[in-house]
Image 1 (cartoon, rainbow over the protein chains, first blue to last red):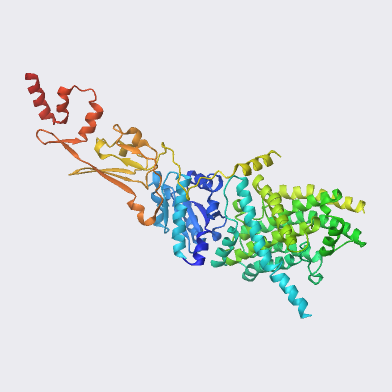
Image 2 (cartoon, rainbow over the protein chains, first blue to last red; image 1 turned 180 degrees about the vertical axis):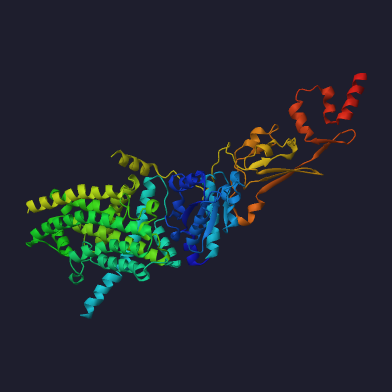
Amino acid sequence: MGFMQKVFRRSPWLYRINAGSCNGCDVELATTACIPRYDVERLGCQYCGSPKHADIVLITGPLTARVKDKVLRLWEEIPDPKVTVAVGICPISGGVFRDGLPIEGPLDRWLPIDVNVQGCPPRPQAIIEGIAKAIEVWSDRQ
Amino acid sequence: MPDNILTLLFAVLVFPGGLFALAFGLILRGLDRRAVARMQRRVGPPLIQPFIDILKLMGKRTMVPEGSNTFVFLWAPVVAVAAMAVAAAMIPIAGFYRPSADLGDMLVLLYLVTVPAVVLMLAGSASGSPFGAIGFSREMAIMLAYEGPLLLAVVAVAMVAGHHLGQPIALSLADIVAVQRQQGAFILDPMLWPALLAYLSFIPANLGFSPFDIPEAESEVLEGPLLEYSGPALGLLKLASALKSVVVIGLGIALFCPIGPSGGAGLLVWALQCAVVTVCGVSLAKAALGRMRIDQAVLFYLKWPELLGIAGLVLAVANL
Amino acid sequence: MSFLKVLVKNIVAGPSTVAYPFGEPETPAAYRGRVAFDAGACTGCRMCEYVCPAGAIRFDERDDGLHFAVWHNSCANCGHCAHYCPTKAIRLTNDWHMAHLQSEKYALADHAVVPRARCTRCGADIGYGTDAIVRHAYRGVARQTEHLARLCPDCRRAASIKGASL
């Protein structure tokens, strides 16, 4: 592993996209970041406000028709190489909203997903597990 | 006088500006993040996390948004880093480093301290993003609010120091430090405590830390002026802000409490002082307070620090 | 200034962060995680398929038996299936290690076959999971009539009449 690869592994910045989620997964993401019990900052992660700073993007929600174009545009704004993580069963398969009228998902019809985190919502440890997997994928891409 | 130029270049590029200030500023930033994490019962990132972040940003590519002014967009961060490197070279370290008078006096320093804020404004408006424009206007408003207390505090100290030197006002930081090392630190003089408080309250706003991180609020305006930056350009802006924390905190120590012994121990004491100010002045507020609204912040600065600054100036002048 | 007291207390108390991912995570025993299915206990009533809000459970009737499939990537871990299962053949374990790479997306499923039960006398098809039904439904049956439970209706009629004539 090269020096830069080691550096990249220890500083993955996270960005969240809500693709029509019920906010359950978003709450768990906030929990993962903010409460002392599950501290993602010790992995070097940092939630950033701008998609241009992001390395790993976490997408929640089943991709509703209204947000589809916005989500795709936002995703395009994130510089390569990026790793896309689908958090919760909605972006993975549609979950309980599958085959619903306003649902354009699952997400991998439109975007290349790298890591899936199962759960409805996933518990914070599962999200951390997913982020750890995403970091592996990300360092392989450098 | 090529010798002098070489010394100046060394001061600006290596010590205490440039490389040293960069490394020290990043360590202070890491210390701050770790202190905040501990105050919130988290483990927090390693101390060298800011170094890792900067290295990573340097390894990514910079994207220039469509409709932006490319020249300003890309050169503004460089200007900020350069200004801060020069400013860091002008900060005396008691007993260890005395800045050369050729670099300029305190007025130049005060102008340089405002450069990163101006650069942020330029960057925000050059990026062509509406969030950048909002960040621009917020930065402008809060800058107008916090410059007052800074100037009042600095002038109060300069007048007291000037009185000891037999001048109307002492504009050289080296002289101010020399006076304090003879007469005792100004932090022990109750007449200057209002000025000290005004200066302390100026630090978080100038460094863009909570509760005054309004121009770069990530949840409201998506980091405002920084929104469109990525890769090395963003890294340079982060470097500039790390340098700025050394400059602003170092200036505060030079103004109020330059007590370090001579020699290498002086550098150590200075670093320790910087760390204490970072943890007590910046991290504490960051961990305890939420972000203010821009109108609240501006009103706050126009009320309390401004009053403190005026009181400090009046007390200092009346006591001469 | 009480917040200062809180902050100082926090520093003294030290971090309360759990060790995971660098150490072992703790999981409550009652945590609703990955669905586990026991084909031997299933009666083939298909109630779980009916109540599943996400449509994660699917049954498929084939010659060799009833094929059960659950796709965990569609499962909301709501626990309806376990709640409504009469024989507790389906239950939720506390396993939550289900973050996976995209290549494994469709592999995150469990399959099982509920075999068809045969009449112990004539070998006729008598549906699914008879043992499970016997254990569940005929709990207080006398020992003399217990052998009737695994017979097809015809054989059972014959056997009980024969038993009565004795």
